[in-house]
Image (tube, one colour):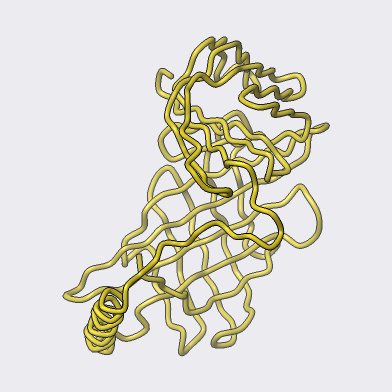
Length: 272
């Protein structure tokens, strides 16, 4: 929608229905408990910011067995009105592509949905491939000193709150991947509003020593400022400095390092 990406998520297994609005590095998410899903019809009220009343159009095949789930692409029709704070975004939508996940009649308490059956030969082949992959990756990672790290910090106490997260991975042959995100959360009436800004960071902008318990963070635009961390190896420490980032529909997030509880730790990398 223009320069914005707008998405809505909700379901009978979720406490909130939310609308998420993104543009570039910045995202604002609005979650409401004032919603109702009846069959394929979704209604949600986002306080004074807007309302949604739309019905999904599609004909999913619910499978043959109890518990079978089907996700089907289709579209929602009806009306979705929303105006962000200060009018940074405003729309009146009557149709949008979407996806609906439905489950055939739930299984009785003693009956489970049928799992995929794997033959002995398939299981052996899969296990051997996983072992080979794991051994190869372990040999490669042994060459890298402190290959992964996460820096996490948050303001203590209830909302409103600010959070900081930075993660980096040192790869083979000098490669590096890293990201930083700041998040501001607040309640406004019945809405939970979360604004966050993210960016990638290079090895020169996020550096760490787990052995010494130190780290430095200096992200590029749209961030400004820098933070330094000192603490016990693998334990809690303290931040100094200030980091600032713009947000959608709200004031900039300003992270004052001294106000946050911070931890530097080795991150856990999982296989895709």
